[in-house]
Length: 292
Image (tube, rainbow, N blue to C red; front, side, top):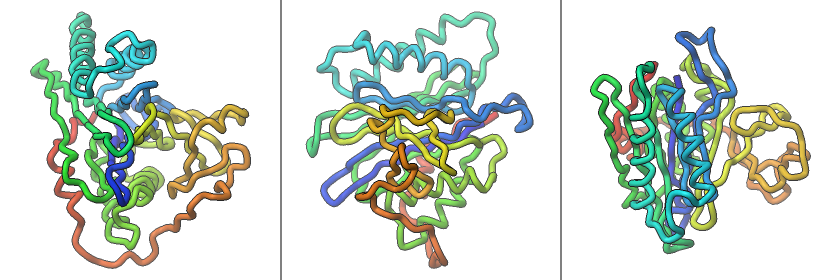
């Protein structure tokens, strides 16, 4: 019932940002019973990002609790490492799940992205936490980010995985291959094309850079502003949020036009044929979660 993607952006010096993006559709048994503004990604006022796919009820409630506690500095000290923070996240999730009694149980996957260090000394980390309902088992896997030299997807999960791979092939075989904009544009194209009926609504995007806290990124489409998949009105405070369109162009939330200093990005035209880049091999390292 989701398309969930994480990617790493790399500039000329080093990895520069970690992203998690998801669609906004939640379904109940079929695409006809859906909600297209369900929240699926979270950014904390710390070095932590989250996204989920699969079952909805436990992940969205548990992550809402967890991110609030993180933002209130109630879970760890300011000096906790990425590995220490992740261990606490996993412990809190499993403890919360154990407090459920006689409730429907289903598979889900949670991504946890974080960072050690700051600026050029920073190191990004990403974990994939899977819950296997049939075995009542938690599977915690770190996605290896070492050795990545260009912007590329890290994990693709959910029912929309195949539809997204189709669009990524088009963009990754183009002159714009290896850029954050090609990855995000492919994600948007997969939603627009409707290749997976269980994925829909608009993209929800969160990011973590070399310095500073995690942050949400607003999305603009057809002169409408969206945050967490929900249309919102224009406010002065929206200038504090970064905004992007379907081609990853930076947008002014006031004018809904590209910022004056924004790099303009073009859509793929007549992409050349060729083999897929190494990222297609890498994403097979983490199995997609079972989708409903």
